[in-house]
Amino acid sequence: MPMRADSRLHTVSFGQVLSGLRAGGPLGLMERTGQQAQGAPARLDLGAFRPLLVTHPDHVRHVLRDRGENYRRGAMMWKPLGRLTGLGIAGEGPRWQASRGLWCKGLSGRSAHAAVEATAPSIAGAVTDLEQRVAAGATVDAVAEMTRIVLRIVNPVFFGSRIPQSQCDRLAAAVTVAFGSLLWRMALPFVPLAVPMPGDRAFGRATRTVNEILLPLIRRARRTPRSGTDLMSLLLGGRDAEGRPLSDEHIAQDVVALFVAGSESSALTLTWLWVALQEHPGVVAELRREADDVLAGGPPRREHVRELVLTRRVLAEVCRLYTVAWAVPRTAAAEDVIGGVRVPAGTTLVLSPYLTHRLPEFWEHPLRFDPDRFTEERVRNRHPLAYLPFGDGPHQCVGQSFFLQEAALVVATMLTRFHIAVAGRVVPRASVALRPRDRVGLVLTPRR
Ligand code: HEM
Image (cartoon, rainbow, N blue to C red; front, top):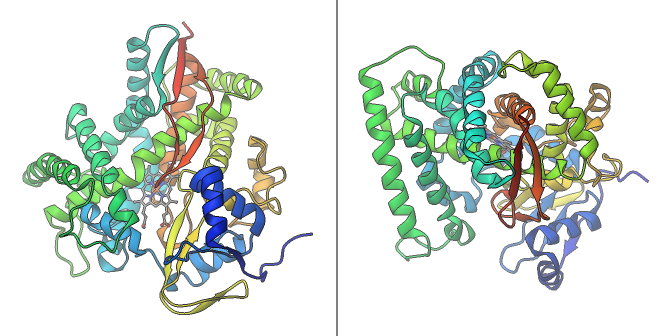
């Protein structure tokens, strides 16, 4: 029987949390809670912290769209991220609004097309490099290689290729270290900065590297302005809420924010795609046929994206089953009611697209990998909030269209050049993003 949106609260006691964590770690606990709650809001008792898990599409719509102004991104755990990104990305208000307008200008609609056009040669170049580097049948680290490809792609889009690829890679590595070293502070956000914590020194070193690369680059770019639709050009020409040009620090923080939001999620989703395909040789054969037909022996071009119909459906299904942004936190500013459940002001909500994507009421056989779920007709007939790998509402991902287009070209190009297999079994782990627990080996055999 379909579940009603006004269902009652499902509670998970402290003891159940502990046994769930012991049995399957944070992801296992979430999956078990999702199965038991079946879309009802669920309160997780973690001692002093009692977040409300929200998964039903009606409730998701309430939080992200209908009452979006009441549910802020400023959840306490995101505060430490502000030291890295100036709260442009994890924040709200005029600072975020000024940045978001510019990000959208550079990445959505026709700009996304221009960005994909600018990156198509980088995709071809990155895959050719990989072909030349690996011996036939070599096993490579999937996340590292997908990251390498993604960074080649973002360089023209973020910087208008103002920096050499080696600098872009160094910058991305420093951002990854800085972000990773914030995990303790994100887990224990109430500990004052004066109290040293693991990761602090690595954070200091990594942010120094970031500033050493970015600030001179921004100053140089200011001295030699040029018109362009790359994000650096847009930020240099941008204005804050008071109409003043953005400061060098603001621009540097936004670039870091874009790296944090865009590069790891893209590389992980591409990695999960190869993992998902491993058990579906029939789909791989069809995908390869499509790639060979559409690319016809040439390099990838933006116009190919439209024709890569199955590739785009496969990507959509990978985003459903391997939802990299598995949890999206919010804080209730004022008291509210969600699905008949009272939500006091200050409550932390955790929306979980990962669990929404597994609700049997909206997804038949939810654990089955089935790209045909994304035919136009089936998408039209589905609850619009049953699928949200890129979030929804005012903070919806600005890189969604760009990612889906570039990823389709990456996948098609890879398939025209390699036979690809994944070595061993891959287990997901819920960190800030949904990552593979261990290194994923990708066995690449060039087709020629
Ligand atoms: C598979 C790839 C990606 C996934 C799964 C993803 C997912 C998401 C999600 C779920 C959000 C919303 C977070 C929230 O509501 O709190 C978001 C926001 C954002 N994403 Fe993405 N993203 C991806 C790729 C990208 C790329 C390629 C870029 C940039 C080039 C990007 C830039 C951003 C930015 C700037 C925001 C913040 C928007 C705001 O707060 O207004 N993302 N992303």
